[in-house]
Image (cartoon, rainbow, N blue to C red; front, side, top):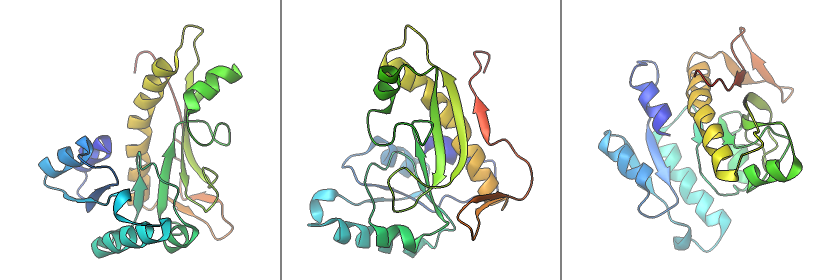
Length: 199
């Protein structure tokens, strides 16, 4: 989220309307507030069902009338109704090279599987968890000495590069979800980002 906000500061065509957290005392929310961004805290414990939570979340989002809703570390499974409401406008980042390793503990999953490459994926959200059409991916090598934490840090570095880039594509109307459910690029831009020790 911070990487996207910092990028947007230099892009007059991008306005971050609000930052919403489902966790109390979120450091990210505190930081966003310091940047002068509208912030909202919608807590799980205040709602007795997923439907009620998602309805409250949708009302807050729609009050800002955003073009896109970006999920950056928003760790909730969203209801089908909510996902359909933002069809083609709801974007998620997941810390694996989907379709490999959906769900949680992706870095340990990668180590346990013995893969040589790991990474992250930005995709349009569909009702199927971590299964939507892929917009872009970033790959990092898996080293023999890696722990889950070390691998996670390398992947996070790529997330901070890739997600702002994709937000730029969305703002310029370069990428969209086509009628056939596949990602459409209006012109060629990087959709695969590779780790480099030189940055």
